[in-house]
Image 1 (cartoon, helix red, strand yellow):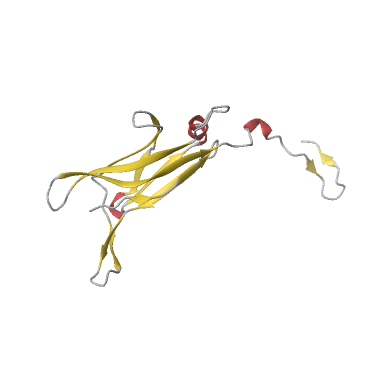
Image 2: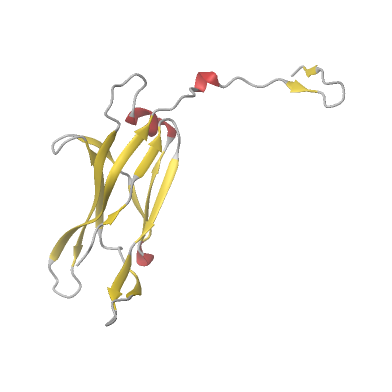
Length: 151
């Protein structure tokens, strides 16, 4: 049985970011202690992840990349343009929704096609304060005279 992990994801509008996760097979011994049986091979898994405003309205589809599938490692990357488009300037709230990461795979024991939610949580996009237009080159000063250096 797969138990979904809970992880909040926060993106600042206009920033880039990479989120990396590793799936491992955890079991319990007779005393109830957690035993790590190693990574789960996700090579043949189909992994999809979406954040939704409502049951019918998708806000964002995560670009999942199986980075090291035999070691259970997958990730997603959000670039600057994508994060800006998640929350356009002046758009009204809400800027928080639920997300799920779901996997489809063949059960190695039964051979049946399985579907499982492997991760879920809140997806938050934070409004940024600084715009690209706020960046102006700072003047350079001569360290000895303290006078501005002309470029």
